[in-house]
Image 1 (tube, rainbow, N blue to C red):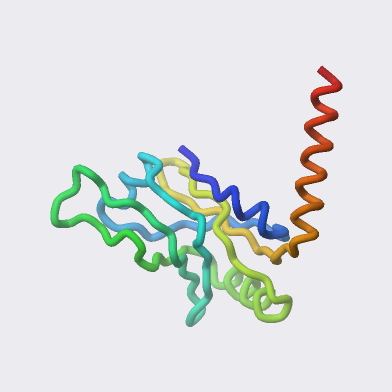
Image 2 (image 1 turned 180 degrees about the vertical axis):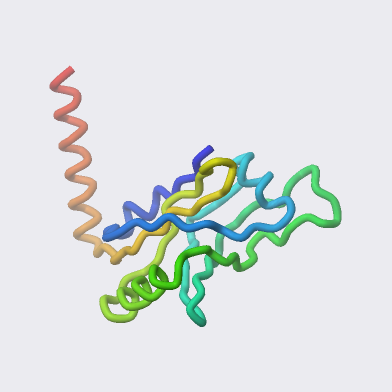
Length: 143
């Protein structure tokens, strides 16, 4: 099961991708396995040399009881200190943003692919659409 943030590739130039673990509670992992996650408006920030994921909506587990999780809580990401410092430098100096690109499983553990991104302007987005259309036309002609 893989949950993608398709909007991220349209709105941002992805400069670098980093895999991070995510700290989950109780029924969150069950909701992720069912694919009940929305990454649309989520982003990551660095506070006190720790990295956090904000605005990620993980729906509550239907079969959960009073121990069900809060849907939009701030979740901690697991990275090495030197990786966090490197990201901190790029975010502050280059004006980049940390955007989650996808959530997936590796050996039963949930991982988040974080992209170090720069925002696209409207003319960049139009250029991306134009390139995608050209690629589709080429694929059609080759068939």
